[in-house]
Image (cartoon, rainbow, N blue to C red; front, side, top):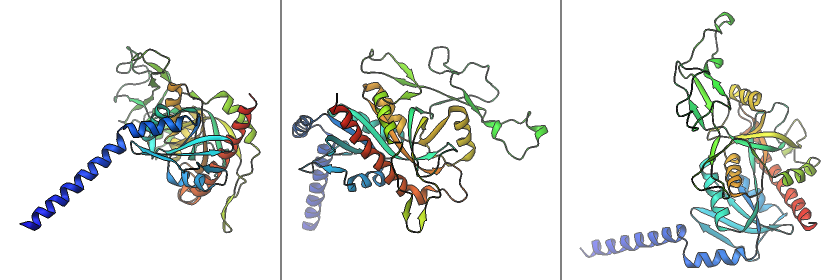
Length: 355
C-alpha cells in the first residue's frame, strides 16, 4: 500500500512538472514578455527563416554568423528563436519545420513578437528549370503557392463554372491541369478521346488580409513579389563563387552559380515527378520548387515586411539519371545557400548604412 502511495505521489509530481513546463513554453508569461521587450530594444532585426536543421546548422557553424554575447535564445510556441549578427546587422534565426503550415505559423510568430524590419528565407529546393543545375542558388522575383485548387467534378470542362465561382471564392483565371493529358501507353490515334475520372484541377490564388486593409475583407494574391530593393541587391551576388564538391570523390559536373530567376513555387508535397515538373515549368516558368517559401512570402506580404527567398537546388525534380540526387547533394546545396545568405546580409547592411 505504501508503495502505491509513493508511486502515485511520484506520478502526480511528474505530471504537474510537465504541465507547468508546457504552460511556460506556450504562454506569454510576464517574464517572457519582459525578455522579448529587452531583446527588441536591441533591434530592429533581420529575420532569417530556415526550414530544417540541416539548413540551419551550416549557418550556426559559419564564421560569418556571430551569436549574441549572451547566446540568447527564446523558446516559445514550439519554436526556438536565436539571436546574433551577420556583419553589422542583428539577426534572429528561427527554424520552421517542414511544409507550408509550419512556415506560415513560424513567420507570423516572428513578425508578431519581434522587431523585424525584413525577412530572408533560405534553404534547398528541387529544380523545375532544365537550364539550371544542382548546386546553383536560385533567387526568384516572384513566389506562388500552387497547392490551392478547385478540383472539378468528372464530366465538366473548361467552359463550366466552378462551384462558388460566381461569388468570388474560386476562379478559372489561373488555369488548370487536365489529368487525361498525362495518360501513357496510348496510340496517337486515341490521344484525342482518352479520358480520366480525376478530370481537371484548377489553380487558385490565396485569400489574404493585409494589416493595412479592412479586417475580414479579403483580397487575393497568387504571384507575390520579393522586395524590389532586396532583389536589386541580390544581383550583386551573381559572381559569387560557390562550392562544387562534397569531398574529394564527390563533385558536381558543372560549376554552381547564383542565378536570379523569374518565379519559384511552393506546395504541401515533395515533388519528384518529371511530368508535373515539366508541366509547371512550361505553364508558370518556375525554377525552384519547395514546400515553404510561398508561405513566408504570403505572410510578409500581409504584414508589409520586405522579403526575399534564396534557394539552392539539390535535385532536378523527378529527373536525373539515377535516384533522387537530393540524397547526395542536399548538404552541398545547404552550404551554398548559407554562403549566399551571408553575403546578401553583408551587402544589405552596407546598403542601409549609406542611406
